Amino acid sequence: MINEYSESDEKSAEKPIESISRKIKARLLALWETADSVARNKAVETLEPELEELEHVFALLVQGAFVGIPSPPMQISLALLPLMEREMMLMMDKIDTANEPLSHLFSIFDVS
Amino acid sequence: MKQPDIVFYMGKGGTGKSTVSSLAGLAAAMKGKKTLVVSMDSAHNLSDIFEIPLGHTPKKIVPNLFAGEIDQERMIQIYLKETQRALKKNYSYLTAFNLEKHFDILKFSPGLEEHALIMAFEQLLETWNHLDLIIFDMPPTALSVKFFNLPALSHRWMSQLQTLREEINRKKEIVNRVKLVGKTYERDKILKKINEMKANYQALEKRFQDQDQVSIKVVLNPNPLALSETERIYKNLKTAGIYLSGIIWNQTGDTTVPPTLPLSFKIPSHLCLPGTTHQLTGIEALKTYLNALDSNDCARLSD
Image (cartoon, rainbow over all chains, first blue to last red; front, side, top):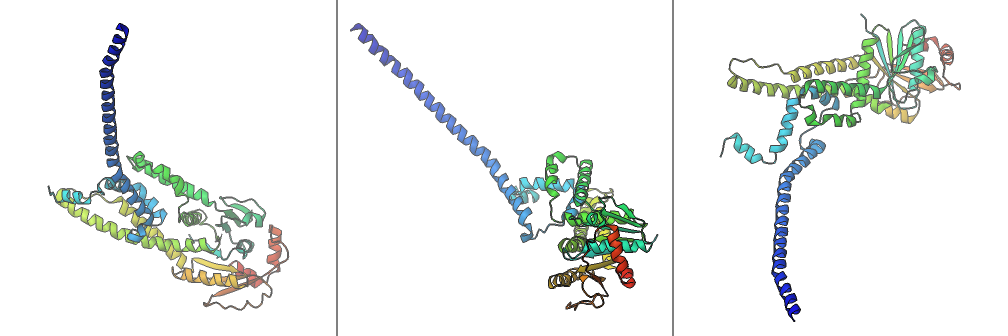
């Protein structure tokens, strides 16, 4: 009887500890999942506009003739390429700002 | 120094352009003219006709006669390597662009084949300008027409780019005058390059249009397909202001009278070359054929 009493005492003593650790674990897991989800969304938030812009650039290169951007014969592009480092840098910078044309316009006119 | 006469033989595939080019070269050499025959067709036949292995650098065949076969791929590779060298020299941030990766694909770009032929043409004129005659055995019609049209097309492009660049420079000068009072505006290297290229294409375009400098002759067999293709060649070249100088009827039966010509245009000169049952390969076979020709026809072949 004494033994039974001590076993049941042990059982009831363990339950709160286990239950607390289980709760803590669950909360930590939930926290982790939330943090993971936020971080993933943040990463995608930066990538998505860049991806969209890359798709725009690709469409321009391939189908630009239909929106008024014809391509010269390749030997003309290649002959001028070594002299156009600055223009290439400008094009690459444009990829960053082209997704926010209004804010770019506002900054030109110093509208805050 | 007098520039060599230039003759192009073009036409539908299989009409005998290479054979006629070889005969014309040999006939000219036998008359004492220092002559070069060059194949611009990547499916070269001159080696087989002369029975002498030929390469990118022309070699002597018989006294007064040289022959060569242009290696288009080699011309394109050299051109792309030179461009890469210029990029490495001028660009500070080359690695940022990853441009080197793209050069492997660029050699397949449309337009580079005919540009390679133009480069070969200019190099040959520069190297062999001491000769009396240079004969070009051209590739089949599609590429040949692109070759002849490339200077005119490129000239138009350069004119447009020149206008745009001058407009950019005018606006830059205004900005610079406002912001950098007292400083002189730096000369634009891009505009300088555009002007150089435009002048070069303009000179080339005029050369192809000038029948005193360049003769373009079509080789055809007397059949409807070859006739239709000749019509198309004439119309295509006419849009660039280039006109044909002559027609060579190859493998005809009766050489006294040219076949009936349902062509919509007039050509100043016609020559009929009879067919032969013998294989026209080797110098001796070519000489035998030329000796059997009427002396008038033989003389006209080398004009």
